[in-house]
Image (tube, rainbow, N blue to C red; front, side):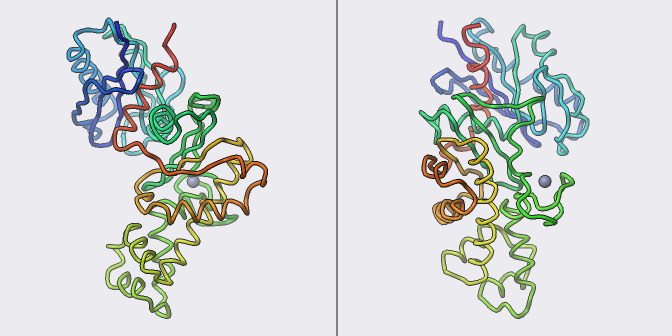
Length: 323
Ligand SMILES: [Zn+2]
């Protein structure tokens, strides 16, 4: 009987579930509301309901190797939520694995929702065939994932991969995490927009982008910045240069630390594509030992919106297959 895994991606709005084969073939995908506002206990009940739906679709639990959970924040190796999931009130302190074993007799494993997308890239996307890989996910914030020796590296207490909080500027912008100068303050979608606002509120900056920004700063997005970068707008290009230089500092630190074969840049900001990739590649030279730089390539993520559930399910094969 072909073994399958259940993957669950816990979002602030929806819980998404998948039945996945080891080759990455999706047998079924479904979603239900998270009901985050109703608290941690309700979210856990909903996860159990979703697993029940997937088990029924699969015709029972016999062929299911286990359940992988991708969640915001930190989940430790025993399934305890250690925190860092501010969009899920009451989720911290929840025991996630035990109720799954109790109700369905299924083993469970977990990881940060962004970190697990790195495993999806490694198995099925931009990291195929690579052993050591680092992913930066440039979204509202910056998440990360590290794969070493062909496996997702979770670190102690599931806390590895917080690449967005690498400090790239001494006494830099204040970050929500308590540090100053984290890379996500400069190179996430939010960071890029903030850089644009602080540059363009100066009435001396008179490019078309700056003038559009001043009409309604609340409407500015990172996509808009990159639309103007494509038109070679001086102000937008200046924001792009700062953002990609800051990101390159963080990339350089991970290269010198881990000497990976590949760096993968993903997340919504990377819709801008090669313009960012090329600039980060070029700038990273300044922040990395050349011998390491030369042996590492850099590319754009390939997995789409199913990366979270697929990575969650892939953890199950990595951790439970053959056991
Ligand atoms: Zn931070």
